[in-house]
Length: 389
Image (cartoon, rainbow, N blue to C red; front, side, top):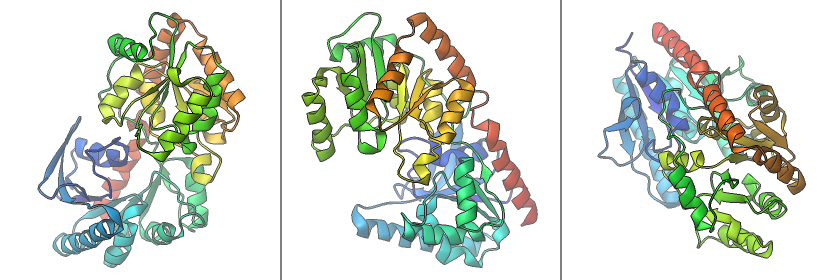
């Protein structure tokens, strides 16, 4: 069985950003499957290392702009044609909608039992008609479809008229994925940026910049109404961007600029280090479509592995998880009053209580919320396909 290679096809560079998009490849490789990835990256790169092992890769460089992106897709088509002609026992594992146009052009000559389509999003055809056109056809062609959230899967199965419900595998970190411990020195260095020190300070983390899609305006309004021991930490701040200028000005007008720490874009491990030094994680999404209404982000288990409670949108899927497992508070993402009340309730706990909760959340993240708790289904699908080809 092991001689049948998996070709994992993705539009992401696995050495940049969070690892979730590539987690299925990491997992299968770690389990001993023969796997090669076709993805974005320098042409000279033939191998990538990740915390649990190594993966062989065929990397296609990506240039800037629309023309550069189009050239990448053309190169992907040629690579896949070559691999299809030389690999008659390959399983094609397609990760994400961005590669579906190339898949549509190349792999329709491949038997559907050799195609697995895995998405961690739901495109909603009316909002993204170009990508949805190809995703629908690839998903219907694939022998197996995997999605990361049950409500998204239900919408996808209905709107794309799939023959079966997609398999659900939560976006999460594996239990053995290294996550830094809480670093009190790093925490103190953050507090020193805003001239604070001592106990009783509460650091509130927003992973990514304070944009509209992360509830930025409402979070700033909420912070202005909270006691001044609540400090906001946000990453990916680019001082020359228009978005930065807008929210920097709003914070200044609200009189809380000195209570916001703007960090640059961080490598994933570094992001986890700063997250672990905080107390509360913000995970707000707007009600602007099925994808955000039924969110299932990887940052949920990132916050939990770092021991942080979350403040999240009171949408059915997220609210159910929040209430069932006691991992935070769900609130109205459009209401700064609701957001402030949620932050205040979580932040009013004593340091001792927060330490106890950090331990509980970390345990949850490495048991019921660990990637392996549902990812066994991926290996089950792969083994079934290998037996059929």
